[in-house]
Image (tube, rainbow, N blue to C red):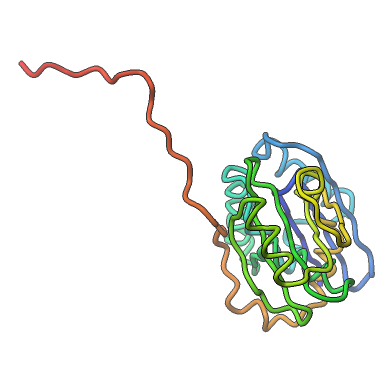
Length: 226
């Protein structure tokens, strides 16, 4: 199986691939906060040239579905939808919470918290029990977050908001700072997972709050009807 994996969230834009027959994985990553629309497809082209694949050689495409920045999230999903339709190849979406827990959370004992940036004063968070069940997920401020971590005796906090959390809040546990997803591990995980778990996986964004809509400050001109 040849798998292409894409992540446009957290603090970068990443594409990776894994060839199960050759047992090889490759990736390209750029740390960017905006401009994903300009770089994503050229990055995919560069990666396929590097591994000498044609687009038709891809068997499965995977992408993260959020939570995250509205624009970069939509760019990743729309690109994967377009590739899936044009190539007639299956594509799946995986929440960043579930993916991070699958790739990193199982390495720690006890309850795990995935903590992602909102670029505001609050956090995207998901608490997982030691057996991988979601205890709680949503948007929370630091007061609520600390309360949840203490209530559930959380042993490790993982994500790209960990540095900010450590600076602002006092909580004693293990920490793992992630700037981006390990995209090669993502592609390997996709190839190794039982395909039946992807049956209900939709290419839909995971939004934990409504989109920001601001009214223009400039007064609208009124047209006079003659």
